[in-house]
Length: 125
Image (tube, rainbow, N blue to C red; front, top):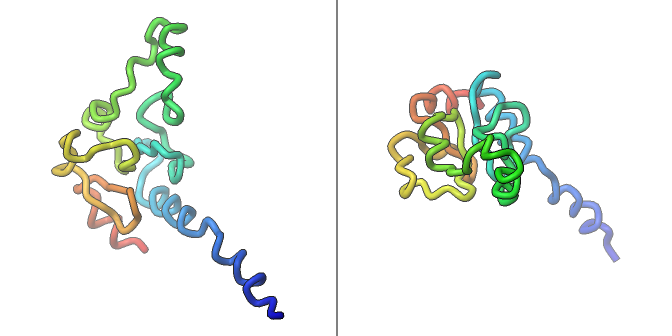
């Protein structure tokens, strides 16, 4: 019996792709720039668009408790108004939100960059 599959399987289940995506966003955005990461996959150090950047389903209860202090979570409006450097397509319909003319895909699945930053980002490996 060969142990080769047992030794190589852990190498296949790494978070290398996720770390590469996070490093790409960090390298290509400034500390003051906003980022939208609705699935909590790459935004480790940048400000997000809303107080509730993850699990926003509970926002309606929170809004009742705080008299709507943080407003409703409308991701299309938040992206259009705050213009983050990078966005995820998680729960975002790019066409419906009208974002196709502002953002373009990166080499990473589900990650978009503002078109004005595109040349800078893609030239940094």
